[in-house]
Image (cartoon, rainbow over all chains, first blue to last red; front, top):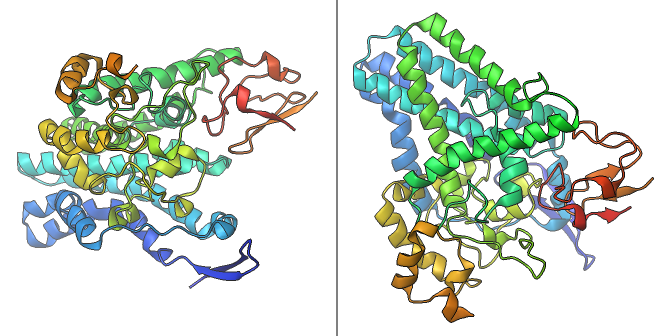
Length: 397
Length: 53
């Protein structure tokens, strides 16, 4: 296996091998799961096989995370440059782009050409949507890079989940405002995921549109100009989905509506768990402090990280957004999720359970230490939370 | 004409060339950029964080 040599500050020579190198191919293959379900349905005629990716995502992966546990290893800082320049890792993110199109078109083909029962059709649409939601993850990794090819591929892959605004919204909006009350994509303590979704989905789109409108106005162009990067990606979405509708007929209307919703819901779920309750404080000049690793919830669970291009090492990602997935680090005393994303999503979907699991975890963080003034709290729930946890902002000052 | 660099990601704003994609014409002074200017590449460093090269 390929290794990297470097010299430590002490003068000691090291040789580093990334043991996860080939395991990252799981992130490339994972979006093909709907096709596996379709193949099993075709050979057995058992429709339940179409739901296999749901079982894999929400039963097998949380169990794998539980069994395989966490990986807290970091590559030595001295090899990071070599690791970043190794094209192998980059090529994996390129390869997965067409596979997202294949997964959606293959699922639509099966839904449109087979006499499926209503629940199998619904299930396949949910599966396709969850899988396209992973396309947002691919677009996320690609879109954070400076290269034109990677940025273009990000916009292309975001056409699959119809989330063309994500590249601007996430990079220019969410990263700027993360873990502040201003951010529609940072969940507040006491805010359940369903209430969050109603704030996040429209709020994120409007923020992206405003950012792109400002940029185009500086270039003396209309927001409707062909240079609008949101419209470029969305145009591809329109071509793709209209093409599916024309090719496979009316069944594509409910199929694509459900698909689109569940693709978006994947991002909503990730955004909800990634910064729940965390708050960047204001400095003496009224500016929000710089984003630090403790402003994001982290997860080192090895299996779910391997299928998500290390997205769950979110603390380092937000502190250093251009760092490539293979180089993201673990730090001590980070806000830590109890499982990988797939497992914690299930908890998040049951609000009382989420609050029960996460609120104490949030209050116990070393930089918060029970101080509610250091938490991003839902204003509608603020009174109840202060009453419950017994510390008021006044008492703290 | 000067250059200003983002200390996080290395993005460099060159006053002479401006930044066509972002809509800053050649010759636009760094001081003339909006007060809420964030690094176009990483968005986690702001105008006051940039260092003169």
